[in-house]
Image (cartoon, one colour):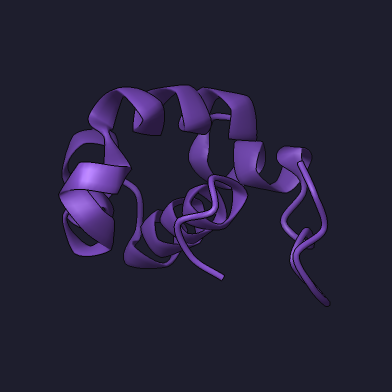
Length: 74
């Protein structure tokens, strides 16, 4: 995973695991299967909230990290 700018990687794998119960690799596998590229940011956030009971904050953080890592957002 590349650096994308200041503060980009402040949410470490340990922090995301503590906050969500899963690490970045697990979230990326889930979101690869969900097909974020087709379904978009808003539906992805709702999906994470509903199916994985993430708070809005965590759902947005996970979705944004995924989108940035996959080159979907800058």
